[in-house]
Image (tube, rainbow, N blue to C red):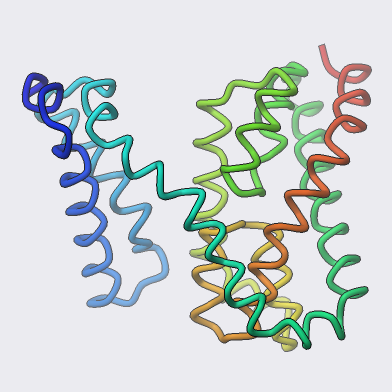
Length: 235
């Protein structure tokens, strides 16, 4: 089986897409938030690799072409932003303050947890970008000396978790404003969460898409300050 994946340019892509389509079918049929297609596809691919003894590097070699679509997929989120540009300009100050608050809360919570669990400064750098899009988060982790592989996993898990609980969280905390819902989802769970925001409404999707960009920029700007603080507090 390893030879099949090593010699094929598309075997990994096919397995990944089939797993995602199966997850999507399960979500459509049972309509449960926990049945997130991305989460289901990750689990199915892992099970497949374990059952058939496929080496991850062999799988990744024929599935890596999907990752090339990550950047253009992120850039395409500018479309809903453009469509709601006048509304976003009208609430620019509230959007900036909301995203800044979310970014500071995210990074500060990581620092507090690292202190509580006695993690290292390298661990802090690894987990710091968990709430921003992978395209930016990987670069931040590399620059700060984090473990890129764990950073990627933490970003995906954060996004999937945010996608699953987004609607319930907005209802529990009584986020009635479309702008507030979009800000919360995009700032906390980047592109994966934004897919849920788009299901909630056009305004939520546009604001969430904008929040991804602003949160990424603010994280890049504030990360060095928090890292310097982490170096004093963490081993």
